[in-house]
Length: 413
Image (tube, rainbow, N blue to C red; front, top):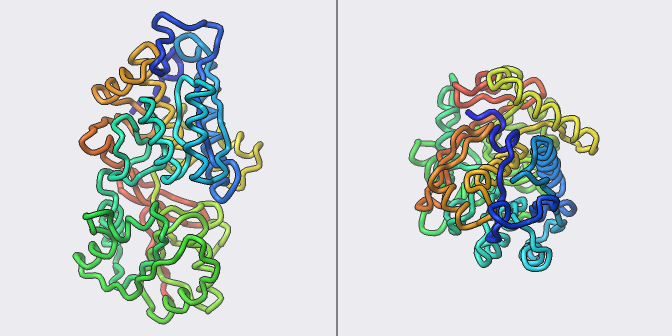
């Protein structure tokens, strides 16, 4: 595993656009400009700010180590206001009007799809950190920094059920609550002609699906769903949703005097779930990295420095959740993909960068060596695992070789 993809950070790396910069053109006193949008306002803002802080931290370290091609790097971030309709226009502006040298993807799958259309039209390499729905990411020069493999709709439920099968009394009855947001629904229902997902995998495992509810992303009244779950008495509630969906669902169930024995939340806002205190103990979710002491110790002092610096920056920015975890790791990895590609080519040339990434892959700090095969839309074998709230903190619990603790079974009664 690379430490900080050191070649990209400590050495002078490269950056890339179809313009030839550093290989023979460009003023060494001018910065290399990376353009992107992020959701700095609107419903995705809490997560968008995590990516902003992680990116700023990476760029600061990059510049302290000499920048790219011997030049400083400037990151130009525009606010897409969590509105997919604005994303394509803003990336078009960044490329055609602002003439940025490089681009970085926005946050959230719908926004990334819009950015990808523009990147493909102009031939720009697009590192992106949060679109995991592999079948939709068809542009060969988009490079994911967070992978659940080429078939995430099977990977997630199989990982979850494998992990829970290790409990003394594994769940046999499950309730599945699914947001109709495409970023989450595919894990329940599959995508396109591939209908594999939680529902089909559960049946393959002999599990009884006692509740199957799809709800709109704009849901405000969780009472009816909570009552349906309470009456069905499942062993496990799976919420394939986003943000505070699981918080709202558990809160509504508590108001009915009910608490499910086990809960899995696909893409939650991690801080608000911790804010439930005792009511969230034992909740499971997906994670690439949690800065648990034993995990950080295994990865070494440079990782600890990254984690600590992010926490300080996030605290100074008054973020409600200041932990360097999956979202921040995805951002960090996306920046490593970008800078290593530039370093490998030695100039800003997007076609050459794209070809170099396909041929060489990248060494990353938190995900090890990544390889990119356009036949599977560049999605690499997943490093995703499971985390669980234990003693009011998120702890990696699966797979066992990366876990900081064992999965906790539900308490009796």
